Picture 1 (tube, rainbow, N blue to C red):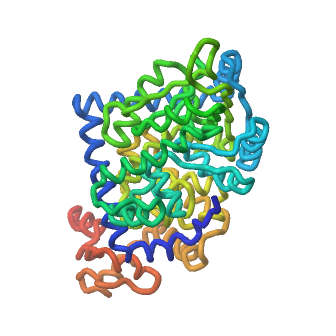
Picture 2: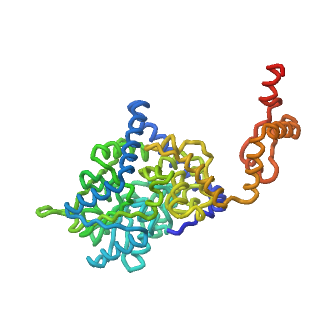
Length: 466
């Protein structure tokens, strides 16, 4: 998928005027946020926080042993009959999938929801070689029909209204007109069922890979994951290398906290665990199973101060809590991963120069860290990325010199005091309605507080009689 993150500001400005989209996003994120609170803390706040920290420790422990666990998973999966392949980048991953498709004569593919396949542009690569690709997650299927990209990690169609989906189904699928969401879902299910039966190959992602038990795990609510992996002759699981976990006990924690954080459910409707292809005597399952571990920039993050972001379990909770995402939706972020985690991942995976606005697409309110099920310090990373932008010379000249003057004024007690006096004198003790020059952007959307009539230093001197 092409990166257009440098256009964040103009695209966000357009999004702010799209009232239907903003209403849909606000309703969807607010509902998910409230359900998360219920799901996470139904047994008490202390229990919920303890589970959150247990999940964080499981992911960090796996990250600390990532190379060894990947080798262990490869050995165990291979011993169980699966083929394990490695892709350094998206192009190599796409090439491997195409080679498998040609080897087995696959002409039609059904897919379960996979963010890493969006990341590497797999659908376009397959379709470019004449292979039919059908997304089977209902939200992803709607996006595919609309020729759009997902706007949310968990709810890719969160930006669309029921009416717009109805019109899309009528136009693209010749659905009889209806405003009943249940009827629309059943109609889509009938269309997709024929695709499942006819498909030569099924492609999934993987929420987790358990090194100890050689298991690829999928969490879904629609059951399409089971059909994608059971009916076609070939199953390919495309998984980021960071999805590895050490033990089944770790997975037991993570598979509870993921749905709680994403949708507020205690458990997802379907939890799938795959160890390999169909064995002798079994009546269903694929003849061949391939697991492709994808790097695509993750190794460059590993070992840096940003390595913690690799513990993300893609629940979308940070988006549901983020005031910026709630206002702009996901498409303004310009790549696969929107919201706070996208504002960190996109620059790290694609280069800071290709996503300069994203580290600033945050109020630093801290809500993203508060709701993260594995306690990733996203606000700290956003600040570090802002510093990286400055150090690499990507900051605009006026801000570069402005920050230097600000630092100079704050480092000198005399200049700091003189600046405060000047501000109080110029404003007359009243809150300024508009700040001058480039600072106007702050007062355009916020009330600037009035300066104190007396500074702290002045009050301190008066109290001490000096």
